Length: 76
Image (tube, rainbow, N blue to C red; front, side, top):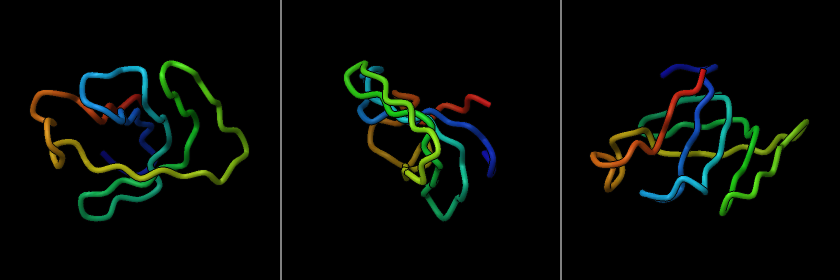
């Protein structure tokens, strides 16, 4: 993964209805920081346009249950 990659980051293992989509702006240690494009919670979408909203997630493989669940997915 590199800066500029678009990712989908899931919040909870086994739940595909809570996640954030964004463009990677920095990678520091085990953490990925993204400009937020979309937030989905319990299946309800919230498109984020023209905002400076950012989210931070942990790289795949660095959290509990990552061996059984793909928590960070590269979209583009």
